[in-house]
Image 1 (cartoon, chains in turn orange, brown):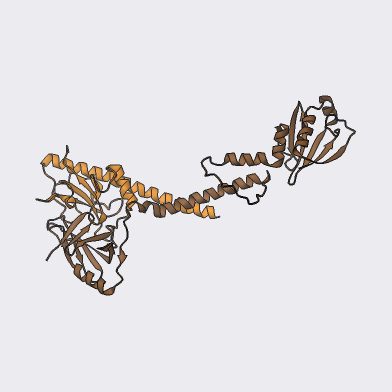
Image 2 (tube, rainbow over the protein chains, first blue to last red):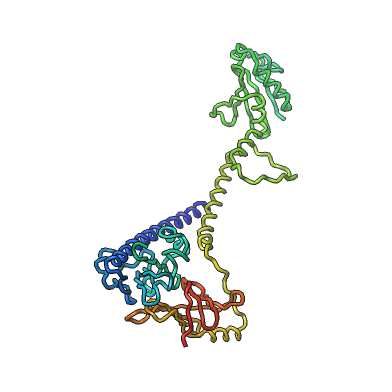
Length: 154
Length: 264
């Protein structure tokens, strides 16, 4: 009986983790898609598109690039996507690199983030260098994930 | 020690006839039984066929019957008549009867990298061959239960332990707490450009985290904090994913890798 109870608990945990990993993998795929779109814009115009102006809308000029993408949806791990553009004298992403950044924010309580430290490390290992303090995938403001987008060719 | 009864056999088990019937040899030692079995194994095949002799052996837990043929010995367990006989040597039969063979099988089925077991002078309870499958089953269930419990503990605590920092200790003195809190109340910014961030520390143990936007009001999130110390340094343990806000000094905070400066 004890083993049955333990098995049910473990099965629930394994299923929950598997589902979360699926969401994380979808999220990392989204980040790659968005990064490619922003890099394409930079290649076409020589500059990054302007920031989203604090709203979860499509950044000005990115309408065609982000058409048919889930940019406006709630992300698979909760929260909303935002584009942080470099501004004069200061780079985006909290002064991390001279790059634009795709940030996930959860300012509105109806889209809470559901990420553990293990999820963040899994994401970093999947799309970056496995270190949340270095590379393109990092934790930024309030521990929320940030994906730095370098100009094409860098 | 083994209680031995011969059926249709001479007392030395070298000859057999159907009219001998059953004769009790009493209790034999392992060496005496081994010698008897070796004699039995050499029995004339014709006598063996005509008399159908056998040796019945009773131990403390089991009863067995031994037959012979083609200079081999066949061991039958009388409690498991439907099971096939084991073909064994005389010493092999002794090992089965005294339980050493079953014990050897149990040890060989355990993982080889287990730590050595310390010898003790405590009395050891003999385990009969019939107990071995039940013991194995219980060991397997215990191992499964341990593995499941271990997984649950790991999933609860193991995954969160990678980036753990030492927690803030409480400030017990109310006067010191009030003084420290009052010294930190204020607004702190990483800069004034869109995309940069700010923290508002309030006196009622609440705070606001915000991001400056270009054309609209700052995006804001509300939280709470508890003032504490890590060593000599002050810190604000928040209820936010970012965790602890470190206090560098009265005018500078560090949160999630960014430095926030107090604005006048």
